[in-house]
Image (cartoon, rainbow, N blue to C red; front, side, top):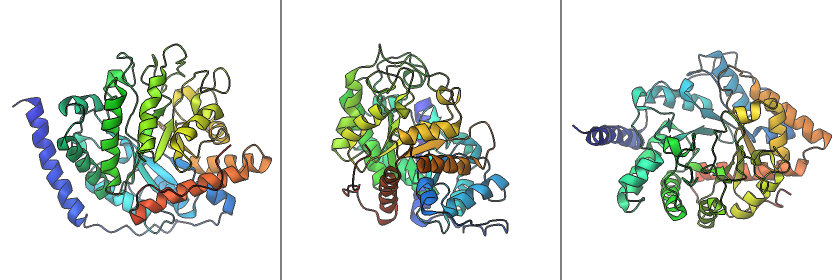
Length: 397
């Protein structure tokens, strides 16, 4: 049996499993929170700041102390969402239970996010009972550049499976152009659909439409384009000055024009057109967020890539990075707490941003505008509406 046939059979089996889950749901109920679950009243500012924070954590159930701490922070508004990594995932049933426990009676609905691109980047892995999803490059090749209904159907299956688990935010699609085939983090891993912007936009649009159909938000990444870089921002801060091409913006522009830009993920990349100063990444530069905002409009959420990647963490603390990112005009930040157990990270980031607001480094009205964007996006998760056309009172300057 060929690898392709074997993968197809596995996918068919898992699709059937997910179809059952989608139709009837898991027969689980959220667990009762342990007695040490405490709710602390926050100020309005702390709650608004909390919505800007997505945190990674250790643990797989509410019986883990770190999960109880994260649950408390979601309930009282210290943080607005979590990102699931491999350390949180054991099986479909376990993930569904974990998500149910984390989201039970939380208002507004927290973001339960994951990186489920396919290929090298899929947190829900076959060895843990989930379907295998092809990489972007493989997907585009197998579907003739995402032509025809087969491509849409495959992404619909992916999205329904995520929704059955309770996941409501998938950090994809990658809309980087495959300019540098030796790029260690994009091209080398098959994470780009193509070197042609029209193919990337078409495939990315299918990915997003399938997720929208089941009320899952997505994020275009990585602005302003990681496909030409020679280095991996997980390990160093890449300077793309001599390799970046203007065409790398085209997928962001085209998908934003067709209302496919729920979020844009700002990359840790240096380029004079997107960096406020030499050595300052786009993720922390107002020059970059203004351009992303001009492309995407006022309802799109700008979110950083993980602030604990070495491109950033080797230069500053995560609290300093969060302040710099929000001050630069991002609406949200991600801090994965990768490689360590730090359940109080979200609380520290919240307080650091609050102090920056109180000192005047971050305008309070900017936090409120970001809060409005996030609340509007979360409302779409529960009412099933298409991307909102409501515009916050003023743009982030």
